[in-house]
Length: 265
Length: 299
Image 1 (spheres, chains in turn green, cyan):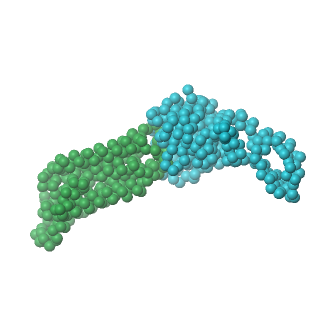
Image 2 (tube, each protein chain N blue to C red):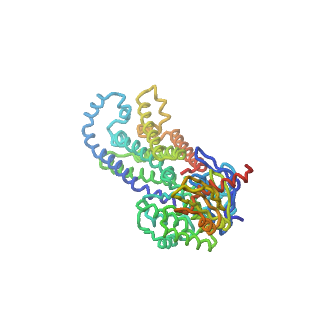
Image 3 (cartoon, each protein chain N blue to C red):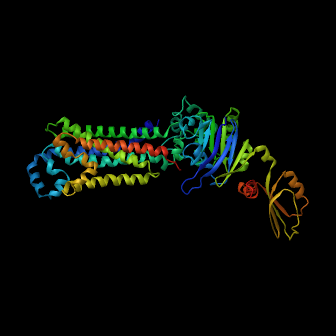
């Protein structure tokens, strides 16, 4: 019941985000042909940019000379950053809003255990994010077709589609786990957004400065670095494991905390 | 086996006042009133019974099952009306009933619609557009729709107009005849008096007394205010006066006893005006129960 309800409830926001992000990447990909025509000029132009900026956006490693590279620099940023914001907001609110809106007294007077509530809500978030990423990937694929002549390596494409999903799930799990410890939705939303933006900031800093490159370990954005995925055609296993551990720990923490929580209304 | 059983139940949390060492039993098929002033611990007790709150110490059982360890199974048999009703504002009334019905075996949404008709509630409206009284009706229906064995109602009549209140009381009486146990809280003694078999009285988180309604009926309370235009001799002595307050031209007291006796006595007094009203629960507490509780403690 809770799973079904949350799935239905999430629909509106889901499709608004799909439309916004899908539309954005589609637009970006549709201007790629013009970029490709003026490739040489562009490369000259890029030399004028400060090195730090090229590093920050992976332009140094990827370049604009393939559709995939172009997407990885331009579109990927939107999907990872804004998608993570969406994921964190969705997951951060789904549990705590019952307390914030004082509906928990209704829900938990029904024959459903607290664990079921947490698990079903987590499941709904996961399903929404899978659908979100699948639809976005389809739109991306169409975008690549529009972008033209390039042959796209399917393995790389699937990885570059899977990576944002993993990232979104990671941030969602963090926000979800966190939300079990609070009673007010607004507070959770703010903290979740701060985590996403801070992580993004750290990933930029880590890629610019060699001194601070160790910081890449603490930011999930680095775990799904598009340059690495495209060059190596793989997601680094250690990062994959870290993400899975974050998800497991966060959801477990949410369950344990929620089971013991006094629901003060 | 008792329908509801509290053993030394204690809940302390944060700065909010909890409950301290509350013990009582509710028999099956009984209508049990739970009264006390605001903030006395009524809602805390009820929320602990429903396992929204975990007890600090002591235990509570419903239908012989522990409210903490068997919370989920118990809820199948409990209908709960919170003191403040809050629902998902994106839902229509009938959508909420359908959602609610989904948690129980069988199709209880039909029964919900019957109840809605009886309480004159439009189920096609959005919940957020409903008035406070209508939201309360939604709450009542979703508590009753699955025909639970135990009904726990937290201040159910607040916000209902007198007509709805009497329909609601009728419903409760019918349910009692079918064997439903009803536990309900209120801060109006007079409201509880009409309906209950027994009442428990709680104040400052502690149980003060459990009364049989028959005993309580014998103890009728009236608040009497006599007004004198001129100075009066202030030497009147009446039987059954619990607490009095005399001024130059007025005499106010709480009376305990038969109302007819009160009237017989009043006839002899040369007052110019009189008002006789129901005392508030707080007044009875102050003048009667608190004193008695103190005596019981040997103070």
